Length: 307
Image (cartoon, rainbow, N blue to C red; front, side, top):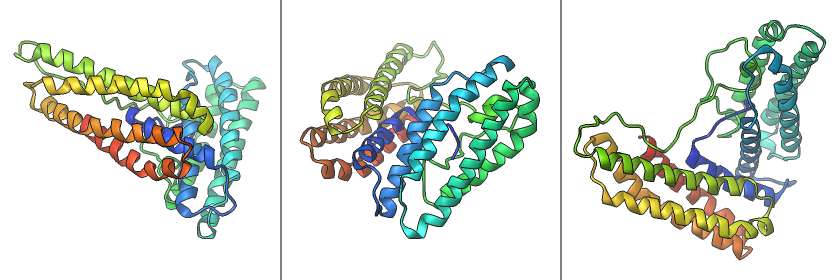
């Protein structure tokens, strides 16, 4: 369970939906395996978002502030995870994962204390990096054995280095649905390519804003107040996706991507609008029932964006 897992932009919406539902459901004394995984991953997704908002240090004198800012976030993550009650068959691995995360948090806190006491930041991190990274790796393995997909996702991990980023975060990996293109400027479709890229960026931005709205939602009543803003973002998304049918791009890879986004985009808007309608009606069971479709549909859109 790394402290930070930067997710693809489109994935924010699916994670936001899950986080919203978990927030409405609260911690249950008799969670099913699916409910447990949904709520645990929602906690980790929220932690990812908060850590991702921190400014990573670029010099030794910034390390202490970075660690002190990150520790309360991880401690809050632990507290929320402890409130979950997994089914009996998952309890042993879950308790082991929590124990490893607690050890990691303690080790980071001790490192921060040493730096605050006057020791050189780089020297301290060099000494403790292997221990902290090892605890994180073990916790990842436990989380994966629990069937978690956000907690325990180590796909963002990079080389282990003696830096604050290694101790408290994984290296930044961003995946943007907006395409990059190597199409030559002299191709006949160059103008269309530039307009296409702008439209996809607008669609991605609207989808990200929609996900941000959901991630900041604490319950149905709160979501209802944000529905007009969320619908406006979907209107922007729809308008941008509709523009994609007007292009035929010379670059085969971009043309394949354009066709995929034009095909999958409307389904994303449809399911998210149904999600908002169910929330507006106060039908939590309908909201929960839509989550698999939200995740699948956005996954198809993300696959079209990234190939």
